[in-house]
Length: 172
Image (cartoon, rainbow, N blue to C red; front, side, top):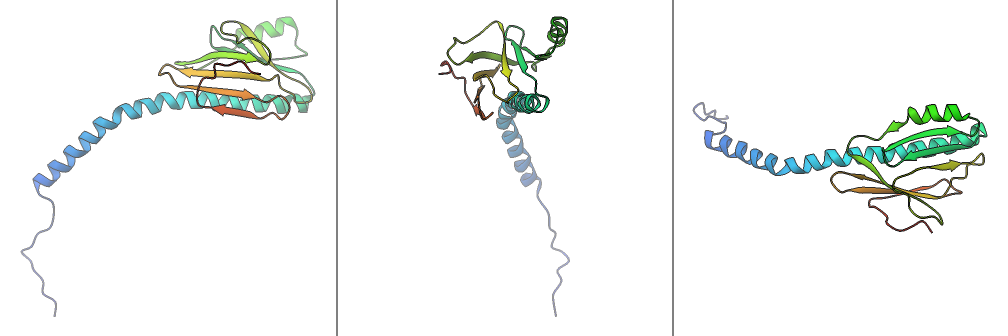
């Protein structure tokens, strides 16, 4: 026959609860800067992923529609827009006026092309031909916290290499 003890109580003492709550508080205090850094990093990663998707989509669209597309960048204002070979000058200007803006805190650090110096403050574009060829380029994005991602575009295969740093060299 089993004995049942009615006087024994189970639970936690006030001291045990205080120690656990204090430890949770200390851990949250230490982890808060990490969460803040992660939030900023996520914006940079998201912007980089969106740019990779846009580049792949433009390459596919140029092949499908048999048109030349240009992904234009204005490095001074952190804006980009898309034009096609069959657009008039007026349509191109309208696209530029309605350009996409990168998220706050994210900046286009540099843009360079094979055999050319890096651009840092001008309008320029990456061309996508009817056959899907891409103008070989390196695009570097950065955030206010000093982190950077660099995209290296391969001209023939449409591959995009993503590096978690700013590449200072020219594309050769």
